[in-house]
Length: 125
Image (cartoon, rainbow, N blue to C red; front, side, top):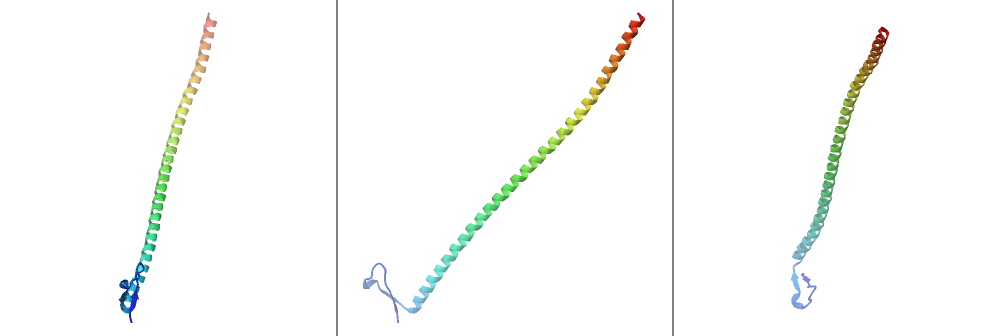
């Protein structure tokens, strides 16, 4: 028993070949394995592509988180500078207020002393 293969393009009698059933089974088996392996490779490439997409997405997430950390650090540093400036201004205002109070006391006391001296001069004259 033998199997006949016919060319799909040309069906003349010189294009008909005969192969043994064992060879035909091996050819069918090889073609089936090839189709299965081809499909497996396609699925593996799809999985690889999906994995690469996930890795890129994770890289973007990490990059964004690092940017958020930098921004948070910058905000924290600015807040610390603002607090330092606030305390510095507060200290300066306290010293200026003390100076102003002393000046006001001296001015008031100086005015009183001048008034007493003038009154004393007027009385003596």
